[in-house]
Image 1 (spheres, rainbow, N blue to C red):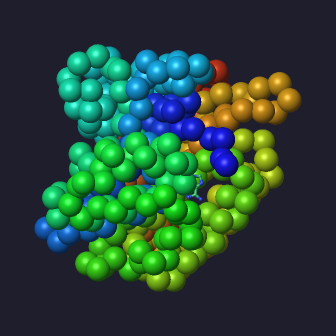
Image 2 (spheres, rainbow, N blue to C red; image 1 turned 90 degrees about the vertical axis):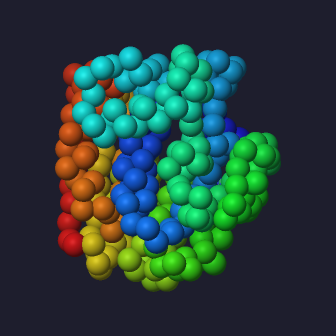
Image 3 (cartoon, rainbow, N blue to C red; image 1 turned 45 degrees about the vertical axis):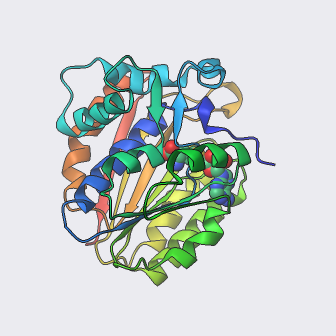
Length: 283
Ligand SMILES: C[S@@+](CC[C@H](N)C(=O)[O-])C[C@H]1O[C@@H](n2cnc3c(N)ncnc32)[C@H](O)[C@@H]1O
């Protein structure tokens, strides 16, 4: 049984980066009339109560959504993301944080397809109760890496894949690369988003290079955004930042992140070494 529960981390700096990118990509997909599919291979619970014991234990949202919540001067990509978090809170105080399925619920049109995979029985039960009744939606308690191939290509040939593992198992690093390769083999034009942590592990350090190699022939190339916020803790433990690797990105994503990332590094950075990187290739 996996021990990871995303509720401990909901709304942290890594969720902010991941969901700012996801929101931009889903809005871009929704600009064309033709329906699309979102496959979320590691869905989590769908939404999280920030007052819960889980979220309060580490209080990670204090270094993520919270500093952005009250800011009136955010650039458009961040203002849009915060507005969706506000909508998820019904316009009230910051009490809930939306997971990727909740952002999908807010941004997919009624005809768009949603495929969610979550292995943890409790989180699967919660996300299935939340979204299982939505039209064109399937929520499975299954291994999202193994299930991905069967979902591709999507029927309309328009699709987004979010691969957002916990990396609790070191094998996740290799499985992410294999999943990306397989996704592109089956659906070369699909937009694939891979979240990855910055931690002191050789597998984590090598992952961006391996993702770039896997995506080298993608028709629209790739984009890689990283946000580094904290120094390593004594002993080298802890997540110091994270990255989003996007294959076949929207042509608008680079400009949006060029606006968002400096503000994120400044507002969420925990020390003078906080910084971002934004790279794009191909396409
Ligand atoms: C980082 S969280 C997902 C967060 C979610 N995508 C979001 O943005 O709100 C990773 C989730 O993957 C689940 N998980 C771990 N291994 C899995 C696998 N092989 N297939 C599907 N889910 C898995 C964990 O239980 C956890 O809920």
